[in-house]
Image (cartoon, rainbow, N blue to C red; front, side, top):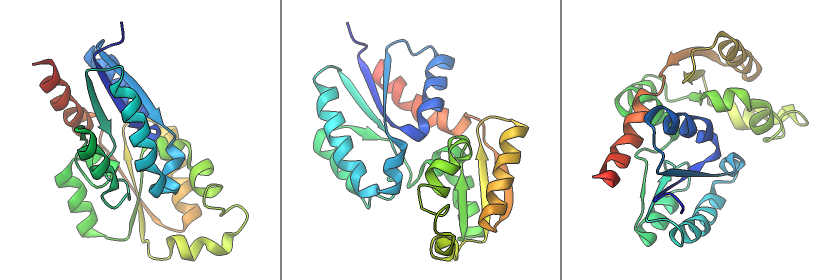
Length: 200
């Protein structure tokens, strides 16, 4: 028998969602993730999500979407409403990793901030350097990053090696660097609140 709850998540959250499942003992939760590369083409997220929700509803009693808006301009919300499912709160995953209040303070202090998570630090070359074509066309750098002033790494794991890699990514982009260690606290609360609702 399949578990009664399905979380359809962004591939960029896959490691963290699996860790929350393990830490909280959510044996009734199944995770399925869509490719993280969809973030480079956000108009493709909602159609892929719609197909995943339709398939998931055939198998599971509850379906939850572990996405923020993610640059979809409200399309993820429209798909969620269409199928009667809920998504994580916030405009970006950075908001629920940092916590809404802390994220908005960071954004207000410097609107020109580029954010990284553990996933993005690990996969920066694939998703940013090569994904945006900067390895082949470095002249595109001002178009993509000319309005940014700093890079903030919102870390989940407290690992010096990831910190060093994030610093290197900031140097590559020509941005100031700051690290904020968030752990799993705000993200865990955002997901757990919904799991508890389903179990009650």
